Image (cartoon, rainbow, N blue to C red):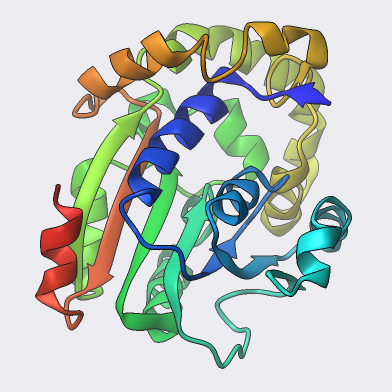
Length: 267
């Protein structure tokens, strides 16, 4: 067992709080990484599909969630969500650190595909890197096109005829304090990825193994857990409007969706 980074834990804690407002149903997840959000959704009674471009990521998901796959609660798919032909409408489309890997046209295609796969009362939940002022080596090695602001999210949604339901900056101020150390570790361990193509860097971004950055030895579990981080989680919630937050969480729905969904999610 390994301990999760503090920023990851803070994001998962916020996501759990928000997900509790939605009755469990079916999801499509894009870019599952090591499967932390997948685990959260499954534990809360959801079932669904996880898409990833990297075959090794899907293989790891199949190993981690073999029981749930056997129970037909999870179907990992090695494919591009944008072009995949899944004839399925779901309650939730969710992605974490995915949209920043897409150029402008692909970003709009992603929104269109998400709309096509949502039920009439379904929503999309997305986490993306934010604060362009904090662009650094991690963005370069991961193959990012951009970091977002609340204004750029609102513009993207408006252009694609979506309605913003909820938005919050996450992990501030802890991740900002740790950013110099994070950049040092990324440069030391992953700078060789800069020679790879953008697509290859994107594929590898879900399977990063940087000690004290993307994972911590299990002995750190007594410090890095939801109980010990709860005061920082409360502090994080005080700064959800901060433009310096390094992660943006948002919920949205197509404008054609019923207004009752918007009323429920604005709380």
